[in-house]
Image (cartoon, rainbow, N blue to C red):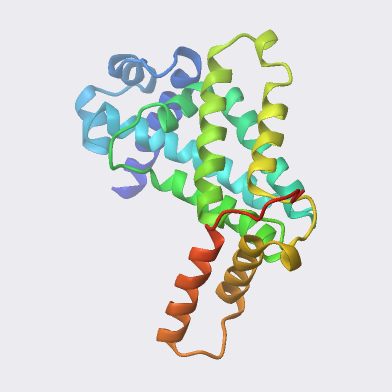
Length: 236
């Protein structure tokens, strides 16, 4: 029985993905069923409703995107890795507008798709590498929120505008974000927030010969120092 069910489900996903790419997020349940050669009750049996089907399609497409991102090797330069991650995110979103609009354009309060969480986890790894190198001026977790807000907002904007209006915009935004979260060279010795961020990142990776209560207190202190105003004078 399972062997018979699997091709039907996969065919529904395949046809829904094709129509989603061709017609956009408003593709009808009827069109999907006709393309897959099944009745509406069959679709509801496997996916519950149209929203369940489209969620499954988007998750499958996004899983392929995440697999590609995981396969990209580090350059050895944390800031260059952030640039490459930004460019890849933009390129995928613009090339797959219907998938992207479903993934990030339909906001539901309190809901955060699992696929988006994994994408943010990959970004966090890059930011933690930059923090360990003394190159980050904000805590990695804050950097994730800043980068994703800018990256997602810009991608949705680029999807809406003609090609001529996109020229150079992503590169300018990317460099503005890099400047907002990083320093050009390690600044641990002369910048207290950067030093706190670097030490906090190192402790997260390597640990320390301290009791759990001591580690908790130290982490709280470092978090407070990491969010302290930067010292006066040039820091770049």
